[in-house]
Amino acid sequence: MNLPGQAILSRAIPIDGATDDELESIVRQHARFVYQIAYMVLRNHHDAEDAAQETFIRVMRYRNRLSEVRDQRAWLARIAWRIALDRRKPATEIPLNEAAEAVLKLYSEGAEIEQIASDKQMMALLEQMIDSLPGKMREAVWLSLSGDMSLAEIGKVLRIPESSVRTRLFRARKMLRQKLSSLLGGKHAR
Amino acid sequence: MRDEERDRFADELLDAALDRYRAAQPRSGLEERILANLRENAQLAAWFWWKWLPVIVSVAVITATATIYLARRLAPAQTALIASLDAEPEDIELEAIVNPERQAALPQSRFPDGVQPAVSKVVASRSAQGGLSASTSLSRREALLLRSIKAIPEQMLVAVQSRQAIEELRIEDLQVPGVKVEEMVIGAAERDK
Image 1 (cartoon, rainbow over the protein chains, first blue to last red):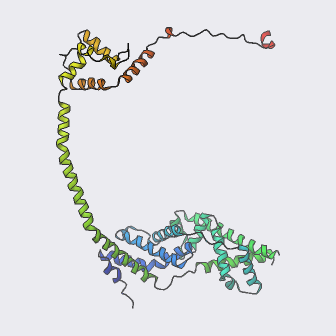
Image 2 (image 1 turned 90 degrees about the vertical axis):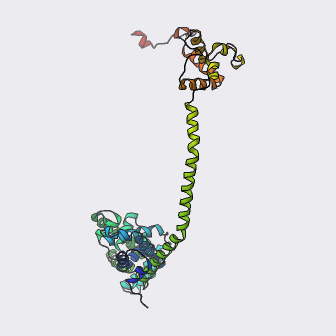
């Protein structure tokens, strides 16, 4: 049974009704976006949902001042970002050479790029390559992969100019490509 | 795989993998779960507030009552203390300090042989000159100061006096044993000059 959306919070929290409606509207509009930011950092559905819950609990504490927020999306993104970073655990390391070998095997068997890209080993390889990037570049990559954020929005979250975001993303991508190429080439040299 | 082919493959694979990497979608019903959680939190906060409100009020009332009670109880005691400070010191105490006869009657064992505290000397000399007598009217502060001096341990007074004596030494009084400087050997070139 679907609960009537506008009524859920209004019934529960005996405060200004308009504010509750606004809060509920924010949840419905941005929940997935917040989740994606958290997921990009935490790489775990359960942890990402917990982080999203905590993000909106914090928002609820400021519900009476929501009208003062200029850019709600960037504001939410920053809250979720901080929460996710606080909860982040070190990623489990996998042997890169073994992952690269599995990728090359798929390639030699004639698998399509899309098929190779969606392979579990390739995902683990990419995750570890992103983790190995310098911190500033890694953060820019994470946010660029979260919920179609624009460069300006990423800049607001990281509190850096848009041009710096562009530079970091460019360098990060270059490093990832070189690393992947090197891993594949190392295997090929055999 | 040639280098160009490998680079192109790596490039395409990276693009495709990044697209896959970003395509994380939550389980359905995320919004409803978040809203339900917010509702629980709001109810919990309200329950917590109503549960602890009587306790908070009680503690505030007890604290305020205790503060007022203590303030009222301390007020007379403070007034009495101020009154005692304002009162003139007892005459017998002043007499004992400023009267030279009484000073002489003080037990001599308080000070080492031949040592008398500087302050006592000053009081005695001023008394002898007639500048200070038992009939001299001292202000309350002066009287309290004299009382304080009386309370200083004699060892401290002796130490102060010794230090004063060292400071009063003149440079002529110092005797330094003669210093003999050995004849310096100068190099031949230097001597020829």
